[in-house]
Image (cartoon, helix red, strand yellow):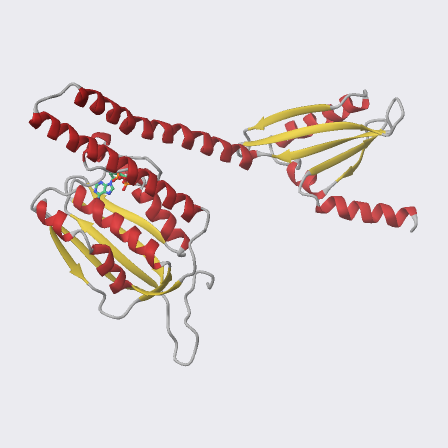
Length: 349
Ligand code: ADP
């Protein structure tokens, strides 16, 4: 192969790399800049800084030493570049130098999310664990059967909350990892029935009525039945928990164009406007004390949002403080065409 052809091949190959690559000759003149480097260090504002940093890194490498630095840029958007440079050739001074540029913004963001999650989780687990050890200590020296019964009851409730939290966390990580099993056609009416199971008694005990309007037509979605039932049950559980005695919780479903929608409406305490987007975040609660009293884990709506997302849908809320909330779970409708396969899987658009 001729030298010219080899250069052409090498140029094409480095253009495919996901890392920015800039090579200069012994004079510091740039002789190669691959596609990714051109993208990262182009005419955008702020990238002049990146350009200068790459130049400086190449100069240092030409002086004979390896160099590594991290550059935070704030314009036009915040991003972080890692720049490493090396001398090339075995001679002194070197024949040239190379600078490798990595955009590590996404990596940094994920690291921050993970750090926050671990910090939040430790805090969330510490609270019930602290309560458990305090209750156990108090029980040790207690003889009064009434007090013992009360403390044991609270101990059980804290232990159950802890165990629910671990179950929710396991569910969340399974769903986030995409380990959802096969999606099958599921009827919304059946999901509503199944999700409601187990709520009739606790609702009645709190003086809350349950009102169900099944869809007028047979609506089906392609779903993991277990996850969809658990998402709807979470919404019903919240609607009951955040309602006052005498209120009604309405569960209904219907078709909006190509979407199947499921609504859970309550006449409860409502959610302030500023919190309405954040309640879908892990561990976010509007009122910590109330959530603790209802035995909440702060993970329910995060699970609902993930379940909706992998079914090609979403969940939203409309709420007025003191009047109530309506949660809408919108999913892609499965349409059965005569003599054809069902349409409306998460993959089709
Ligand atoms: P929790 O286990 O605390 O209920 P969720 O993730 O299910 O956690 O909900 C997050 C927060 O959103 C709750 O702590 C509560 O403040 C608020 N919330 C959820 N559903 C409702 C509702 N139907 N009415 C009022 N507030 C609600």
